[in-house]
Image 1 (tube, rainbow, N blue to C red):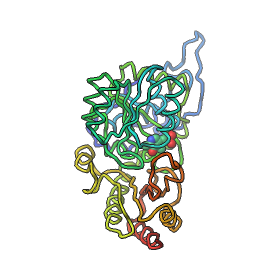
Image 2: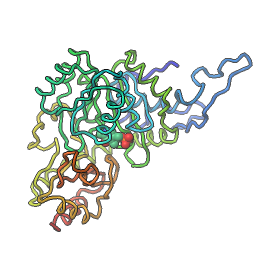
Image 3: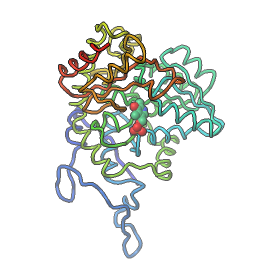
Length: 388
Ligand SMILES: *Cc1c(COP(=O)(O)O)cnc(C)c1O
């Protein structure tokens, strides 16, 4: 099936997004695409497909192609593939490493990724090395020593908001013939484009800010090279292993993407304002946010990101687990729920989820900042922090 994606466009991404990737439904002229519901497509009397692009919907459908082409354009990539969840996308990339191979992953990243990689690698005789990617020299040494097949980064990392130097790590990966994949979910492609910094693959949980309304699961992988062996395997993996997105979810995702630039702008503005407010708050011990001048990789973040630093931040309250849970319990506008990137602000006590062995501080709260009025968010945090 031939695809033509990310046509050279002179429009700003905000405009591409506002038009949901552009164009109209050829059959009806509708400005919003229909939801393709058919799973199978007919052949004519001589057994030729009536439409050569349409055979069975596990392969592809027009709505996937449209949405993938929009995301590839946002990423500055050559091609994208949607998956049924962020984890399905991550699993498809991780399965590029064959048994006997080596995978070097950044430590202290999204817990679901860490758990999956540990279990998957252990079961499949793949050596998994976890290392702190914000320590550039040590991480480069790991690449040289372990000679991994795949290097996995998350920028900024969830929930520690660490920032790895994608360009320098990419250069080392090239030297060692390692593929570099970067999960930039917490930033969005409007702020960080790993492919332009030298990564081979950019990965997102579309469940988060890309969709932005906390009402679907989805994932997406984008490549710089649509003709590479790795990309062929990822496409094959989706089609044959079958972790495809539902058409309705894809339709919702494309609808959500129409407002991505507005949401990202507001969420980022709110987040930097809250980070600065919290940094001065007497009940807060530390604020982890790459947009703050006090963040150890602030200059690096500034050089890699544009238009903000994402809508995820973590704080460590003064005191321990008890104090952190008191604050969480007192919040009224922030919802106590996992996930991030939605219009509504969320708070999570990660220690309760990940437990003792994960190394998460007991007083850490992860905040996902939404599009509410900044004064309401500040007031909610202010009253909640006053209980400790
Ligand atoms: C949520 C998340 C994922 C997993 O995505 P799902 O859509 O929940 O499967 C992966 N990486 C990061 C950074 C995430 O925040």
